Image (cartoon, rainbow, N blue to C red; front, side, top):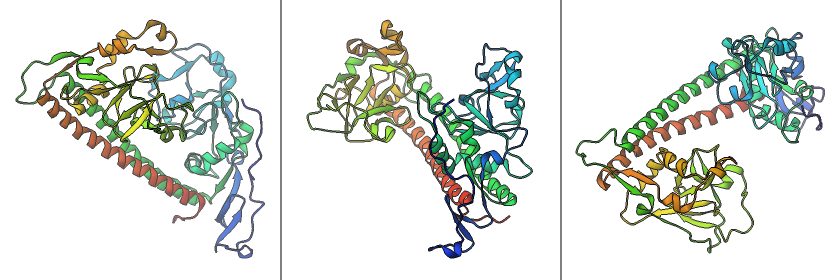
Length: 440
């Protein structure tokens, strides 16, 4: 576990200033090192809010081998993007787990990721994981329900205030992380218990609304994937189209683009699974490209790119069309190409690539040596020799239009989900600081 220490955030309310003696004071509020809070609220260290016999702790250091009848072992990846299915969980042997019985879970406990890229992720333990254990990368926080509302603390730790605490105490090194001793002194702004419960109820209602929209989005995405596969492979045809589809070499439909960045464009792009070709600064908040951009390829709107040395962690064969900007630049690791005039429908081909219908062809020509190093390195000549199976132009246009409707439906649900999430974040900031009060 990390051991270096940062400066401490005040973990009690000893530094409060009476509202009446402070310039700009707010009636009914007091000023603390954490800002203005209602007079009856307190600032408590997190370690003082948990059960005396279930202190904040991490779990098993060396899980050993998998035991199909053993106790569930919760890892960060099991809850970072919603709870995984039971069959995806690791199971640990009784011999290894027994010395760590102090870190066993109960329904309603809060989990906090304390090591790795997901530091700060939080989750509430569901009933079916009662009795499970955790690894050393997760902290268990068992709030005392007779004095505090556990759900309030879950929302607090997952809010902007909680993340600021995580970032303040986070230690550097090979893997970022938090020490248990620091988590114990996390200063939490605590309303009286009835108000904690009411705040948790309000935010819980928002969580349920967001979860409903997430389920709707997942169902829509699954429907979209299924329809795209059927339409783009010819398994489902629109009325009026009966002719056989034909095979074409990619090089018959597209031509390679090697134009250099002689215009001094600085919009370096990368591939994003959700947004396609996107400016690096929108992903990393900075450009991670080299200093010399003159050798980069200049891509224009409507043209395509494939990273010929894509990591195996990204979908094999991922090809994206530039749609967000009028132009941008890409490193020479990409194969850039554009449609030959009248060769095919651009929207159809963009959907064809997005559906992963090039995966098999690219996987077949990937260099075996590169595979062993976690890459799929594809030669340019082999790439343009890959076959694609497509219909005539008229049918391409109809299919592309139908998929466009599916895309708009999916985008609409995603936008609504983003809107709900943003609204909840704003509401959390108001409720968890006491800027807006709830009626108990």
